[in-house]
Length: 150
Image 1 (cartoon, rainbow, N blue to C red):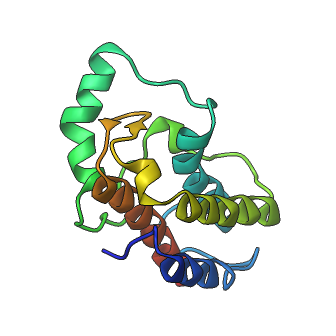
Image 2 (image 1 turned 180 degrees about the horizontal axis):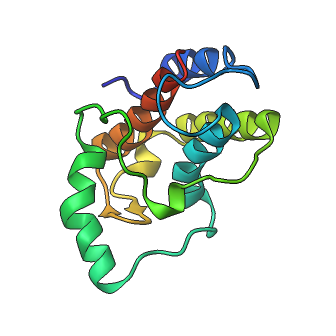
């Protein structure tokens, strides 16, 4: 898995994002390109904002036991996988705004670096290793850029 904490990897991701246009269409799935960008921003909102409440009780346990292994491993996501409720984007979004937010999140994450994320608490999964954070970020974004052919 490529390392999202390396500048060259982030530069490559930004180059791929910059190939998207408001008219880009997905190869699979229901989201339009602006919704996809907003959807990808949710991962970073969960790290950098308090917009999404932390799960509690049985839900937190379920996420740790059943969802976390799929999210943080290196196995690519299947096309048309189920989306967690917090990640569902059904309203219209501004392409340019979501694109800028995503690029800004990528740059911020890379600049904060691996040390910042070492054993950092995930909103949904508890503390994660650097490798788990990398896989969570890179795998998800790569999946959706491939969805839109970039």
